[in-house]
Each structure stands twice: as structure tokens, then as C-alpha cells.
Amino acid sequence: MCEKKSLWCSYQSIIFNLKQHPVYPCFAILTAFNPRSIVLSNKENLSRHHQLELVLKSQYQGVLPISCSAVDGQWQELGFVVPMPLAQACREAARWGQNAIYWVEGNDLFLVPVLIKGVEAQRLGDWPSFLYT
Image (cartoon, one colour):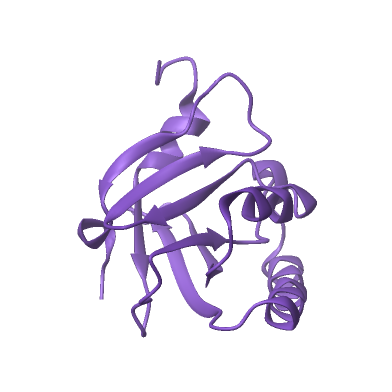
């Protein structure tokens, strides 16, 4: 499957860096960087990031910053940990042109498709094993 869906597979090779660990039973990890995986300039991405932050903080309490990056360091994106229902997280991600989101429930990390087609949500493993601090 990874040969056909290289973008989907690249999303599976991820690490997260955050200063404050979330204590929520479930949460989404959202970003506004590079909509539909089209690489934008740093300035455009940071502008979108700040806009997303304003939207999320106006609707949810406990929004935390997070950095997401490929294990090999090929890319890095800023995002947010947001305690919100999965369906709402997917709708918000779609508004920002995101192909997928990361979802944490209990101790499990999932990759959930939003705009990308032909794939299903996938458990990636234990959430703590993806943290790089």
C-alpha cells in the first residue's frame, strides 16, 4: 500500500515535540501548514498558523503548541493539541486544507484521513513512543 500511497505513508513517519504534555483523554493534533501538502513559504505557513491559533483558542480551552516533524527531519510543521471531538477536528482540518490529522485516544496515536481518499484511519502505535522532548 505504501508504494501507491507514498504521501499517506510519509505521514506515518512522525515525531512530536511539546513542552507541556496534554492530560486529556483524547485530542486532535491540528496544523494549518502546507494545505493539501502543497509547500508554502515559511511566511505563509506562519500566518496560517497564527490564524488557526486564534480560531482554536476562541473555541477551546487548553490548546497547546506542538511541533510535528518527519523522523528523518525532511519536514517540520507547527501545530496545536486540541481537546475536541474527532468529527469536529476533521471538519476544522478540512477548512484548513489538511489531508489528515493525528488523533490521540488513551495511549494510542492514530492517523485519520480528512481530504485524502482511499485510505482508512490507522493506529500508528503508543502515543508516548512518538514524543521527542
